[in-house]
Length: 299
Image (cartoon, rainbow, N blue to C red; front, side, top):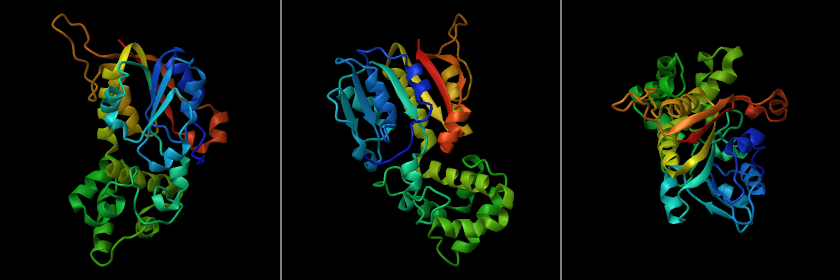
């Protein structure tokens, strides 16, 4: 089995799903299978679990269990595959939107700011768009928007000016090429945070993460049975904001729509408060530090 990472907020995730032993559940970010194994432990012989992952490496971790089906696909295709497997509606769906430790630590994937590799950052390695194409071919305006919106970087104009100037003379090939180029713009005491934001912006664009997230939330809501639970673990403010707004209002803009009689129109109700990792978990798994878990139930 490939070492991915310890499943984040495992106990809270399982509690949040409120698992019925004979129910059908979906783990749309299978990864190393940690959350999936815990779900299976709560199911009886008639329960069922489907696991999604677009990363080919995740297939190495597939669980051998008659109650489990692995689907090698992005969770933006949730409805299509649930219909194919004839399991709609389902009692619960779990999503952990983080990049796995395995992906961060595999040099050639290009996710890490610590390991030098060709600019890549693809979750699905068969897709054509990667970070190299973005850095070397996107327009100045598109790059500025990308770093300002997805990286939440106030100095996006200066960052892009550096990139444009360099790539006119020489291709920017690797993660360290990019880091060395931009280092003069980054205060030493903030370099870890800022380079994480730069890489985050590229990763979001490469994988179309926010649009995929929106599509998933809409599909998941439709796929859930009445009273079914949706549990989402986010790792940065852009993701968490979309999840929070959708759970509260049923829209991504945060506007609660009402019917003719003034009754709110929304498909979900949020359950409990925001959950974050305890100090003990953060100490064991540093990457859990920024995790935020939210739970909603289908009305």
